[in-house]
Amino acid sequence: MWTLLVSAFVFFLYVTAAVFSIRAAQTARTPQGAVGWVVLLISVPFVGVPLYLFLGHHRFRGYRIARKHSERVVEGIKTFADFSQPDPDSMPINPRPFEALAHLPVSRGNGVELLIDGQATFDAIFQAIDAARNYVLIQFYIVRDDALGKQLKEKLIAATKRGVSVRFMTDAVGSYGLPTAYLDELRAAGIEIANPRDRRGPQYRFQLNYRNHRKTVIIDGETGFIGGHNVGVEYLGQDAHFGHWRDTHIRMTGHIVRQLQLIFTEDWHWAHEEDLIEQLDWAGSESEQDMNALIVATGPGDDTETGAMMFFAAITEAKERLWIASPYIVPDIDVMTALQHAALRGVDVRILVPDVIDHRLPWLAAFAYFDEVRDCGARVFRYTDGFMHQKVFVVDDTLAAVGTTNLDNRSFRLNFEAMALFFDSRATQAVDKMLRADFEKCYELTKKLPDQPAYIRFGSPLARLFAPIL
Image (cartoon, rainbow, N blue to C red; front, side):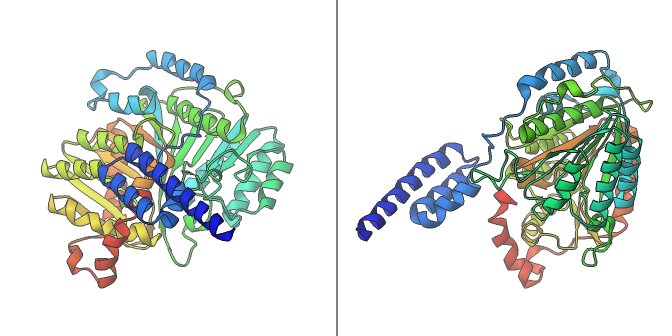
């Protein structure tokens, strides 16, 4: 009897491996990926089948945004955008690829303020929460129950006592260590919680590999925040290992806030099954800065590779300079080729990365890409004044972007991300000034991979094998 059960299990496993092999051949993004999965599944099904269940998908088919509800808001934003279209003379970059990826139009009437490092960021966020009159929408990938997390909790509870509606959302994986008591205290104060432990989302159906990596705060539909910071004292530079934490957030005003609000409502509907459309302010006001801007939200629920295509579109627009700051550099083939081609065209391509190790695998894997881009003329700068975590890029004097998207495959096709794009020379000048100060705290990488220490020389090619999930 036992022998029959074992035989049946092995037969079932091989049949499952065969089915997954066919699916891999149909859906893998590259022939190399398809071959890799097929060989693994057929030769070692005991290993291949469980791995494929967790890692073999880059489309989150179960994710259904509230587009049937939010479509009228999208149409409203588009209609309003007809009256706030940018002056064509102020748009030297073709916005169509970015608009197509965002499913939203570029509009004028926007403003931005760079918030450099944690103290400036959370001072501005807490000040905005204190000034909220109607509602606060807040979403972070990581929320910790430390001094900063407790301060955030106190601010949100105080807002509810003033009659402000507060909705709070975080990620099941990123905030895995957040105590239930923290959420219970928020809920007891009247705050609506999209509990990551209860939500419909990627903790079920072998979808732990998907993360909502967005960091969003919206106040009354008038003020919005996005960037690289999460809620934890390390983001204030108070972690002994990392020391100074170099990160960037932005404070936004104008039409772009309603675009960010739309992304939040879709995430909220998925996580909490509540439609916020009728409860929020979609009119808002314009900023005196009058910048052209757009939110590009990307994720594995999209029909196309929106994260990679956003970077590809930006890289191909560069004529004079392309500066990218990202803690993780594990790009796909297309983006890698675009970076190399930009450098070969004579574009000043600079890539700013941390020298300090955060996550060892992506840190090691990045070395496997540095030689390739440097051989084409790009320059790699390694930040040494603590840990550099910002997600920023600037193209010529025409496009500046700040948000949550890293230059890696995880951000491209496994995480839900968002970037704020400003098509304005004032925004690029502000980011230019910020990055130049960062470059002063860097050294330029000159050693090639064969000249690196043994653990990098041998570890980097091995880490690169995991590139599809890094």
